[in-house]
Image (cartoon, rainbow, N blue to C red; front, side):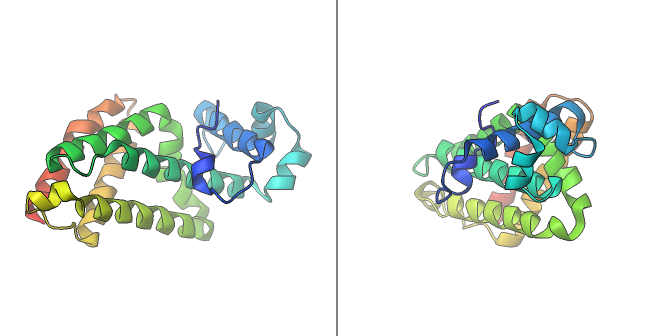
Length: 203
């Protein structure tokens, strides 16, 4: 697994650290294999082909490694959506571009996505800063996208932050339900496009 976490995007000021990246990838592989709760540090270092000493040289706990993995994963998601959207394009086409990038991202890593939605909150106070950061960044992204010329030409107002949060919350829940039911995550696409289009028209 080659930096599926998008670590380089997570913090461009961080010096490259191949061992840290391997540990994050090792956790990602173990989550896909057995879930976060059942993953141990031994599982992570086995997949990373390194030692517990190396693990604890980079992370104090499994929870810290998990938080860093999810932060990097969210950065990769945001970058993928931003790159996929052409701000000059028709606004409805931009919605399809953004949703398509989201679906491609979650299809590539459904277990990590489900862990972010379902298992992260179980960490309690440790999870709160990451959850708020991720929702703030994703909300900022939606607001920025609707400020573009394609939306302006169509007379679509910049999305209000509360509405963006409602849209994101519904999208996350639909994603989690499909993963839990073993469904095809491509099924997220049309409902997400319909909901986004309707919300932005009514904004």
